[in-house]
Image (cartoon, rainbow, N blue to C red):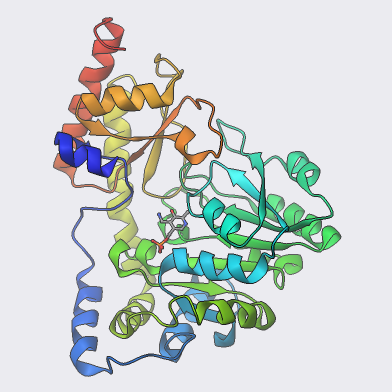
Length: 373
Ligand code: PMP
């Protein structure tokens, strides 16, 4: 979608990356680290200073108590996922994936020789269906992968659901990967709960984090895993021969960024909340209906409730022709039926959002008038 937007000169609200000013504090820290610290290999599991900062950040923001030998710094959330999946999945193991799903999960499970089994969140509130989850478990199931806050839906898994997942993991001796890379972008009133705070999951779950998302620096690719020492040892063995380490100066900068006061993080989030508000209001004024969401950089258009045909791929194509890139939510399913939902990224400058709103308003008016399908 990004390439097609570029070719067509369309506004790209498809791929999730911000075009807002980057956090000056982190850029300054990275510059200073280049000249003030070593540029040689850091320790394989990451700089001790960064691992301490990650532990401090989670203690402060999520009430989580983790020691630095439970943290491995990776090259983004993606390498954290890769190291973990390759460590925990053996050929023939079944892995339960929850749709809509982030695109890296399935290829990584398959690369490890695992067999994917699917359950689907239930729109419009995208609840995780616990009965379907229980029914998907077989004697060969080894692992469940969940994502909260969720990309693309922007919804969170509540503590009660996580506790129930913990009970299932305990009863069937399963492990859990919880992709929490969006934990720093909770913009609504909901509270992010990490499975590591659920007692039954404390030694069964691997938490995936990403500085790229916390600081809106997606190109830095600094991420991490948080898991019990025993699980961390297995993950480290994979990480060692995937990337081994991650750029030393950026690790210093992320360590300093994580130690910024809560007010800094609030102000950073507030800029994104304003973008969400702007796009939401503009689209609603143009007759679009959006689903409620608490987190991430995305809003979801409900096509049927917007009075539009439910074929999300066709509508996404139509919007692209009208000059705005989006992602049909069916792209987040392994075998996709049309979903009736479209994802738009609001992490953009006001002028970009306003121009997109104008184009999408004209697109919808054109459909209503029968001029476009
Ligand atoms: N998981 C999810 C749910 C994501 O949305 C992303 C990035 N879009 C990642 C993992 C990957 O994170 P990173 O860019 O740090 O590799």
